[in-house]
Length: 462
Image 1 (tube, one colour):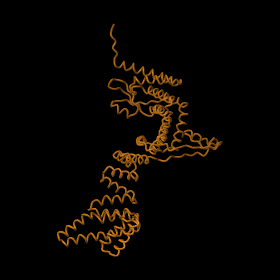
Image 2 (tube, rainbow, N blue to C red):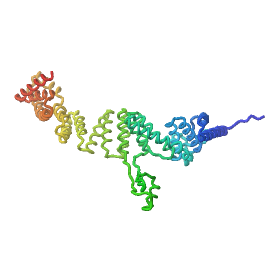
Image 3 (spheres, helix red, strand yellow):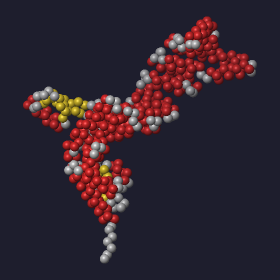
């Protein structure tokens, strides 16, 4: 008797046939309500598939998702079941890339990303039309209504993480029924963000990558008999509208929801910043600013990211970009002044930035303080050390010159400190500072006045 040797191709075919039989049996059991058998057949198929679902034809993949999802739904695992059923719709939305791997096994990748990741060249592009999702209505609709109610209840109670998971569930259930309504993914992302969940970042990234904008048109008309306003799909709405006065509906109108695309970039950039993921935040902001170059919020977030990442040159340039877009941005002008004042050679430039703040807000205390401390005081210890060295060296002319220049600087900065005092007359810090300034500028009457004020304030604070 000859020994029979099966080729690898024949073995693969035999295994695939077994998987098809098991999955088909699972579908039959799921339709019959025999959840135990469906789950067992799916488990057997998964054991032989070994995670390589792409080796199954699209029709068999659809049957697998159908039986697996339905089995999970009926066992009470609604969220997980919905996610599997939603993949049925994905089969119809994406191109199917077919070919053979290195072992000559036929492969079916759903979507270009999966095809590219396979590393297999020469894959053929095909399409597939699902045919099982129409059977899901009876099962899905009650679950959909419950998931929607649970999501809203959780959100109203500020149980944001629960709400986010439920909004995801609603999306997947709708998707399983053929409706790709990403508005619920948006609600989920917002809820994750409000609940401070790490899942928020991925949720927003997915929305951005999908091209979601939030812009949707709702088609509305009023029932003549009941007066109730009802929404329709576009085709039905147009048919009712064409009926005119003879029809059952009136007051036809459309409503267009707002575009939230910029908000997606802004929110996720802020979330990435809060998570300390500065480079990712900068990459996202850069992408956002290419689409929305005039977005001041993204520009501000970019500055914050540069600052927190220690990229000070980029931070300075970002501040200049901010004031170019928004000349009334006091914070950006102030920060520019602080950064520039760190270079003594740019004191005049820094002074101009602080003055710009005071033009916008004459009572801005940080800017008043900066005008003295950052511009006119400078490195006062270095100056006094130089004066003391000149004195010890008996260089009287140099000693007097250094002190005269110091006194002149203080005289220029004095009005800003006086303005600060007018706004905070009981602030011991400014009172003590003015006492010293009046002494240095040789205004003895004011020196004595503020010496007494300082003593009085110190007495009240004991």
